[in-house]
Length: 567
Image 1 (cartoon, one colour):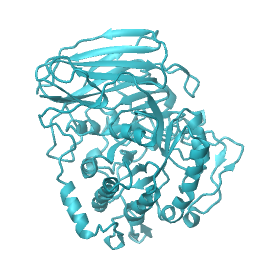
Image 2 (spheres, helix red, strand yellow):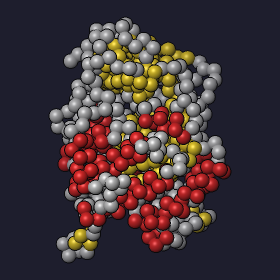
Image 3 (cartoon, rainbow, N blue to C red):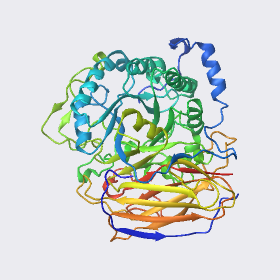
Image 4 (cartoon, rainbow, N blue to C red):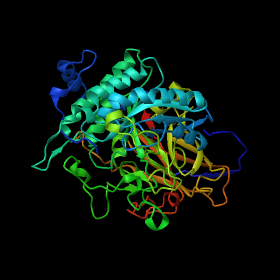
């Protein structure tokens, strides 16, 4: 898929390798007394929901039966670039007008955006009624950009997440009811802090049951016909280590058509620029934390690895081969990754926040143009990060369906312009094959062919440089089914199967082929690529250094997986 079609020169590297897969805000325990249940979902309803979801089987887990292909390959399609994590003056730490964010997104090549201001008492009480007409006006002013209304949800018991819906008669009502009943900021009650005042901790594990109930609520709105689709993506999942492995599994199991993925790469990508180069000199992506009382203990940093840092700008959960993301995929559990801006305040922009009292009005007020470039941590939507979505059309529901099905590639710095992936059986089974996010099948003992056509950058990125893709990694691992320990966060059998070098002289589209010979068991595969500027000795991304991480000098893309079942 590509943004447009054009003539290419081709470099072919056909490789066949024998192989088979045989073998911040609010942080306190929730107060049940303050719960507001919706649509007749009383305590008994929640208890039923939890007992059902906690023992649920992963959606689409391999069960040995023939599968119907998912995301069937259909030749080259189109990518729609977007960003599902954007803030405005209606966030207590934001500053921009909706119109400014959408105009910049359009300027930097995005087709769709999601406005996701922080859930809070003031946001629920004031901001939704104010941001809604601003979003509607932005849609009228920029008819070529899909502008979704969403929320950055404070997940009870965990971090943040994007929740969003397509435009519809009930969209605003659903979002407001969801926030009022299920946002961790509204559910937390201040408690004494050992004589040091009051604190709140929405990230305490006490909140986990309400996160599952919240996702069930969104699923119920789809099933009832109030909205055609609703999606949730966990944001900056490893930043504070509070998203435990069992929580990812629980979210997906609770509402498999709603909870579909996570930010593979967080926003705040300018944060690590050196102070000597005019930057903030902090952690790239805002990843400079250490474990706290609510962090999952298994994420403890070691002498050689720190889950609380980004690696090549990507979250550790995504960047580590055989890590948490792979542990979910090895269960046969679809779980997709994205890349966003998380744009609050843009590096070298001249605006500062308005003078409004967000707590009292739900808005920071109009931003103030100082005329002086500001040192900040973010880039405009589309300026650096992009989530490419393959969809049948540029419509609100179709783009969300593309995200829901995993036809998604996370891209930094325009390292590529498109990707056409085809995975198919060369024997009995699905000879047509599937593409990114897909599921196909092969007869035991037959071969599986993987064809990768990658559109190299045709023009400069917004740093003024034509990014050069240096290598592509094909990563694969066996699908072994549900784990016994739901806090598993490793998949040791997942490996880089083959690395393909891209010639420095390559232009247009490069094509690589790999064949898995004599497949004996279900497996999955995924792709990533790099400019090759910063790699470990064995070809993996390096851990970003706090205060010294130029994002433009270390570019990657990550494509979502394809699952192969055996019949």
